[in-house]
Amino acid sequence: MRKILILTDQFPPRQGGVSIWMEKLALLLGVSNEVIVADLSESVEGRGRDARGPTAEIYAGCSYRSIQETVRTAERATVPPRKGGFTSVLKLFLLMRPEELAKLFFVLRLIRARRLGPRDWVIVSDPAPMGYSAVFARFLLGIPFAAVCHGGEVLYHRSRRIESVKLSAVLKEADILIANSRFTQRLLVDAGCEPDNIRVVHPGVDVRHFRPGPKDLRLIRELGIKNRTVLLTVAHLVEHKNHSGVLAVMAALIGKYRNLHYLIMGNGPTGERIKTEARRLGLEGRVTFLRQVSYADLPRYYRLCDVYIMLSRQMALSVEGFGIAFLEAGACGKPSIGMAAGGIADAVEHGRSGFLVRDIQDAVEKTDRLLADGDLRRRMGRFARRRCEGRFTWDDCIRRVEEGLIPEQPSGR
Image (cartoon, rainbow, N blue to C red; front, side, top):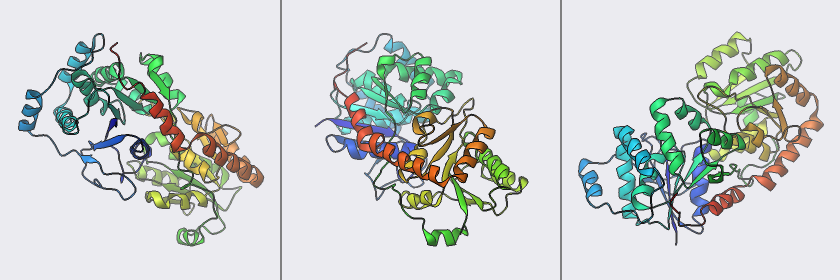
């Protein structure tokens, strides 16, 4: 049976889109492959076994003795390196930080312990920094690898001189680059990647878990939003998610819709700034901040909203590469409003599952249109649900990933 090693620093019980991606890869690829997950996060909080998913091999550092043993027992690769591969791999090695080198040797020892070879695969949750170890697994041991690319990490690493060199080594050496959207695909092509090496594979959504249903009356009482029309954003509280943009929409519409309420779910560094902005706009009592809830409870909150809205914007170092939350809302039968930026155009079908907007004024107009027309909300919500069922299930997503892992034996380039 073929073995697949998943290298990630985001895995359940951590929450977020990348964590969901990696969990579904592990679970569904595990049906026909032996899957090993290596959690390389440096944070120990929340690590270990998750009730919903598989156990991960946990990175806990790498001693000097184990590094010596790994080097002493290294074997020559059985496939030829890529053209110019030695130079790019050497540059990567010389530029890697000590903690990155420690993870590299941890991964190499894990590969030896689990007896992975050239017929197996490594999948990394992002090209940088998770892809660094995969480059050496391919160069030294001939194990092919695929890198899942989300967009933001490509922008970030390309903007930094040293990190850009390291990223380039991964993009050059990868056998397959999995782009989460057409936008990310364009970023990779702009970075000099061969188009034939790129597969666009959209993330999926669990349509059995996220499904339409009535609003939870007990939750409505707990939140004090009885008889309120609800907007919802589920996202990390970071700059590019642009929660302040939704607050501006609220401020523009609150005079017309006196029962309008905004639920913000998530944690992050801009939380206090967003609260200050809400007070400045006179929205006290109209905005509720919720900490991130468990995956099991998420559908209850999506069902509370009338419109899901997330106005993420592209910034110099960050972008919404896709937006799994749009799919989760759609699977629950809710229409969405998102900026026409990054990969959101793949997550929201304009005019059918929701609206893509150009700016805040456009967002005000489209939100007003949805709030004023209950039939339109319901039609868009029903279409969003059918779209998720037909195009965005995790089974279909992982099938497309697995198709890219054939043939199993890479050829040198």
